[in-house]
Image 1: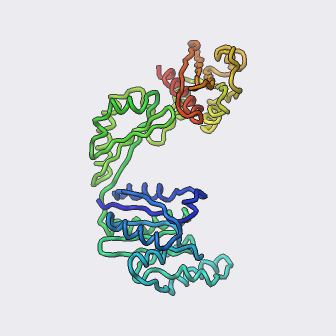
Image 2: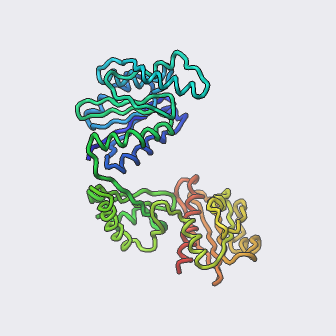
Length: 384
């Protein structure tokens, strides 16, 4: 399987003015056709530095995809930079200019003289017509290498990737394989504990297994490379079965499953509905559950941090109207000098239980952590 690197171009990216979403999109698409992405880079609008990173990248990988820098202005240097890197002149392509003029006329606009820059590409490059924008893309081939330059506008880049770039790569590199990934979501266990239990699987070469920690949650990523989608799925399933046998009920879902969606499925199965109360969490629990738009969510109340002489059960019973619901969840977050204390109250038709936890991470993550811990405890209660 060939490898690739992605280079995003634009000083605005380095300044943090916009967020690079193109790399993530391209990485997923390349993965799906069996191309390993070894590295992503971001560089500003400087032709010499762009040319330098192109030359450097060509020593490591045969496929380079750049995004950005194909506009009509002086600070759109990608065309000249790639020509410089490949020791080529740029040349004017009349057909590209005609496409630009025709597209602008379609919207009642007259092209400016500087837009002619977009019709210049490195000599001998394969042009890529852009029917959804005015910036033509292009491909420079050199021996086994391909440098593919795409617009930075995400929708244009995505369209050209799907309709031109992926078919081109499949043909040029005779791609028949695939790289597939499955994410296993866990809650209630720390990253170090999971690592201890499945560390042997993390040493595998294909499929590979990796961990990604979030406040109160840990994701396990299984990635397989195979000649067919069915074989890749089979390889993943074998590892997933082993992980499930070791981690049991700490696994709550896979891929697009969210903890709250899983909970509402359990609530529906038990013919219940849910009301929540939170204190000291700035609405994070209520907002999270509201986004599901589940009719089984009866809403909730958001309170400031509880007074020191108050307990969560007392506040839950006195302040929370649960007459129209059969399930209630209360979560209170209380800052301390070196930690955040969390009181969680779960009310079911069988009674109420109070669970206490402490969080020692960054205070800004405390509400997210408390929300995830509380939802997972509710999930475990519903699974009984």
